[in-house]
Image 1 (cartoon, one colour):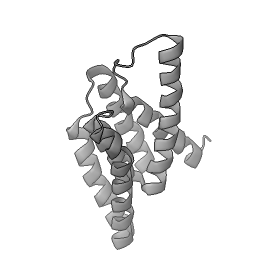
Image 2 (image 1 turned 180 degrees about the vertical axis):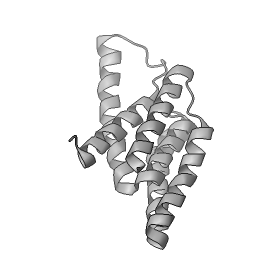
Image 3 (image 1 turned 120 degrees about the horizontal axis):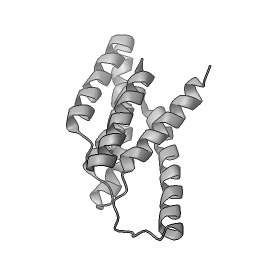
Length: 142
């Protein structure tokens, strides 16, 4: 169930980031709360620890780029949402895959297409790609 929810929410966040340059609080905040309910109902106190660890890891991974001005607050909240729903390991691996894809895209954009460093790059799209890759690796395709 969590993976299905993550696919939908990540897709919505990627779309709004790409189209409107905004990741909506009305998506991320309720999803973080749903993660708390999900983990608490399924695993009790240990579930709350899983939720908290995922949330904190998600926040910490992008807080420095955000503070330095290279990342929007929506990206930070989106990654925290992923962590709250799927846990620390999942969000960390999603982040790594998304960062690798984003790096390759930026290299191509800057050096092959001759884009500008000042152009907006919707990082929520790359977070979503990282989530999709991690779900695929954990679940596979039947």
